[in-house]
Length: 310
Length: 303
Image (cartoon, rainbow over all chains, first blue to last red; front, side):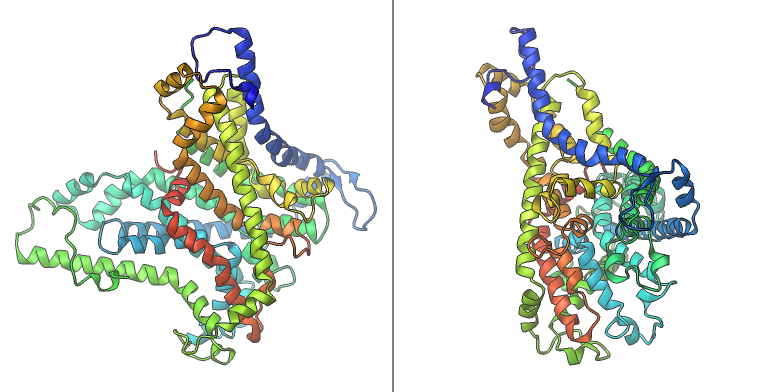
C-alpha cells in the first residue's frame, strides 16, 4: 500500500500524465481484486458450471462416472411430476407469505406512525422478528404447533395427523412462521416509506373532510406504492429462499414432505440425498430463472440511487 | 413499558391540527380525538402481543418443569422457574462451543465484507481505470444470483480446496458483497470535492485519504453494513448445514438448535432454553443498533 501514497486523490491537475494514469488504474484493479476473486470463484463460476453439470447424468449406482446426456436431463427433470409439485408448493408458499407479510407490516407501521408516548418501545417490538433466524423461528413455532404441548389442543382442536405431518397443513404452518419472521422487515420497510410521506399532504386531505379510511386508501397507499412495490420484491425473494424451517421441522422422511418440498429444499435433497448433482444443477437453474425477475427489479431499485458521475 | 397505561395520561399530540372546517369545536371533537388515541393504543398493544407472544411463550415454556408443560390452560407465567434448564441446554447442546463458532464465523465475515467493500467502493468512487463501469455492473449483477443457486458447485469447490469442515469453508464465499460495495461507493461519492482537493494540496496520497478522511466520513454507512452483515452471517443456515459435517468444533449455533430440537416431552424445555440463548444476543443487538439496522434494511427502498 505504501507504494501508492504518492498519487493524489481525485482529479488533481494532470501533471504526471500517462504514468500517473497507469498507476491509478493499477491501484483501481488492485483494490477491486479481492472482491472480484471471491465473486469469480463463488458466484460466477458456479453459476456457469450449473449449465455444464446439467448436461451430465449421474448413474444411480455410486462409483460410476457421470455421462453426457445433453439437454435430455433438462427435459426429464422439468417435466417430472416431482418438479411440478415442488414448483407448485413454492408458488403457493410465496402467495401465502408475501401479501400477508406486507399487509400486516403496513398495518403495524400505520399504527406506529404518530409520535406518541411509548412508541419507541412499540417500534422495537414490531421490528424485533427481523433478528430471529430460521432455526429460532422453527423451534419457537415447532413447539406452539406441537400436538401435545402446543396451542391447538388447548384451543380444543385435536390436529390429526399433527399439523407438521399433515400434507394439507404443513405448508401453511411454515408460511405462518415465515410471515411472523418477515413481519419485522416488513414493518421497517413500511415505516420508512410512510415517513417519506409529508404529514401536511395527509392533513390537507383530512381538512377537505376525507375520513381516515379514505385518506389511507386514496392518499397513503398511492404515495406509498414505490415502497409497496419494493416490499413485494423483497418479500418474494425472501419467500423463494425459505427452507430452513422445513428442514428442521419436517424433513424428507415425513408424510407431508412432498407437499413442502419447495425448490431450494429440492435442490438440497437432490444434491445430498439423491446425490445427483446434474439434476440439482437443473433445479438450480430453474430457481435462478424464477427469481430473476424479482432480483433484477431489486437491482433497479438500487441502481436508481446510483450516481454515475465522475 | 409505560405505554400500557399511556392511554389515560393523554400525551399532547403533535401540533394540533388546523381547525377542521366540518367539525364543531369543543367537547365532542376532543372526546373523539381521545377515543381515537385509545383505539390506536389498543391496536398497538394488540400488535405487540401478537408479535411477542411466540417468543414470550418460548421463554415461559423453557422455564416450566416438565409436568406443567401439558397443563391446560397453559401457564402464562412460570410459578417456579427452572433456571437449571438453561445450564442443561448449555451443556447438552454444546452451546458454549457453538456460540464461539458462530462468533468466529460472524466476525470473519463482517470484517471481510467491510474491508473488501471499502477497497472496491473506494476504487469505484475515486479512481479511473478502464472497464470501471463494466466492473461495477458486474458487482451489482452478483445480487441477481441467489446463493442457493450456486451451492452445487460451491460445495465441490470448498471440498477441492480442502476447506470442508473449516472456518475457511464457512466464511470465504461471503467475504465480498455487491450490496456493501454499492453502499460504500455511495457514501464515498458524498464526500465534498473541496475536501478531496484540499487533501491533495496537503500531499495526501490515496492511502492517507482513504484511512484519514474517506473511511471516517463513511462511518454511518460502515455501521449500517456492519450490522447488516452481522445479522446475515449469524443467522445463516443453509451453508453451515452443507459444509460443517459433524464437526463440533466448526458447527454454528443455528445448527446446534437443529440438533437440540426435540418433540420428546422431557427435552422440550431444554431445546427452548437453547433457542432463547441463541436469540438473546441478537435482541440486544437490535436494541443497541436499531438505527443502523433500519438504515441498511431500507437501502434502496425509499427514493
